Structure formats: structure tokens, C-alpha cells
Image 1 (cartoon, helix red, strand yellow):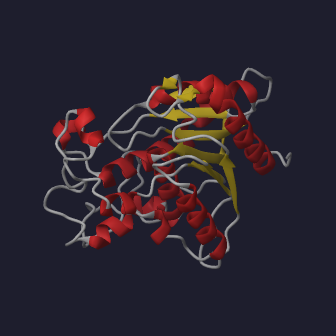
Image 2 (image 1 turned 120 degrees about the vertical axis):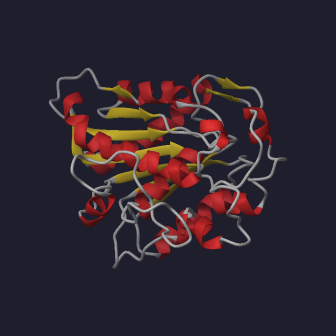
Length: 297
């Protein structure tokens, strides 16, 4: 994890915990170096740029629930330690793009669904990779220890839809680029056909609570109008589902842009460039954060 603290004179800042994209198979936190630095330089937030395991790690044995556990554990670590970096652990936002957006939605929607048991059809709950001293996953769940105050989901990947469309197949080019063989994301003993409940458990759209049961924090959803991987229609549908459940959610569409417009550097395949594409989107994100944490539009 890389931590960026603003250079102004405030004693304490709200915190933004950032998760990179890459389809759970590509990239690391370095792909978010430039957006993390931009936020810390152009706004008043401590920014935590997080690494998490990829599916191909550990000889291609890491499971998707373990990746979710890494994201949960990162937030718990930040809450416990961020005061050492001038961060306020009572004012925390999560943000991520693509697969990272999915992980942020999991934190928001499923952050109370924790267990010390191994994720399985009999236990559809998650084990944070990091836990505060002398606390169990159940303790964290009971006190809502993963509660955050805002979330920004940029072109959040719909994993369940991806699984239906062959994410686990050896024909998925992300496995090939990574040099790994396609497989079941929970292990080869589980499949979408036979274990649908496991796949539904990592689907944020299937786990939006009604606001009268659990109120979610304000959320901003962003997507490029030309995104072929996470379409505006899918993000609009998730936005509508949040609102229908009684939650506060904003939608912003970046006209003319494709996927990964927040990434550092340039992506020749997607045609994105950080300097040309990311600042306008990051300014929208900063405005949302400022409105949420400082009461300033």
C-alpha cells in the first residue's frame, strides 16, 4: 500500500482507499500511481493506493473470495493505522475502477457479511485478510467495522455477468496475457452451474440492502460513454437499483471515453492517456468527495 498525505497544514484529513482494476488478473497499484498523486495534490485527502492478490498468484490458486478478503482487510488496516499519516478513520471513502470498482461495491454492500469460516456454499461470508488485534471477523461484523462514508465506483465490473459470459474460460484473454490457465475463480470444484449461490454472493447488484434495513453511504458511479467492457447501460442499471432501494447515488457519464480512463500512463489498446483523459474525471470525483466530507459542491 502506498499512502499519500497532502502538504497543507491540516492536522487530519478524510481518507480515500483506492483499488486498481485489471480483471483480477492484471496490474497492481502502480496503475493508480498518477490518479492517487493527483487526488492528494489537488484535494485535501489522504490517499491509500492498495495492492491485492490476483487470481493467478500462488501458482494460480488465489480465489475471488480471497481477493475480496484482501480488500476488506485493507480497509480495516487503514482504519486502525491511518491516524499515523494524518488520516481521520471516521471519514473514509473507497474508490476503484473496473475490478477495483467491484471490490468497492463489495465493501459497501457486503462489509457486514464476515466469518472466520472458509468461503463455501455452506458459508457465503468473507474473511478479511487483516483483522485488528484480538478481534475476529464476527467481531468486526458485529460492530460494522467496515463501514465507510462514501464510495466512488468507476466503470465497476459486473463479475456475475462476466462469469455467465465466460470469464473463467481459457479463452478469456486476460488469463492468457497473465500466462495462467482459465479456471473456476473459487477453485475447480465449484462452478457457476452447480454453485450459483457462491457467484451471487460476490455480485453487488444481488446484495443491495433496502435502506430501512441498512443505509449505504453516498455513492458516485462513473463510466465512459464508449466503454465496451462495462457499458453505460449496466452502470445505469446498478445506479437505478441503488436508488430504488432508497440509497443516495449519483451517475456521471464521461462523453466520448472508453474503459480505463483513470489509468496511469497510456493504453494503446483502449486509447486512453492519463494527462488527456483522467483529470476531468478526477475533478468530478473530488467535487463529490468535497460535497460529502466538507459540504462544498
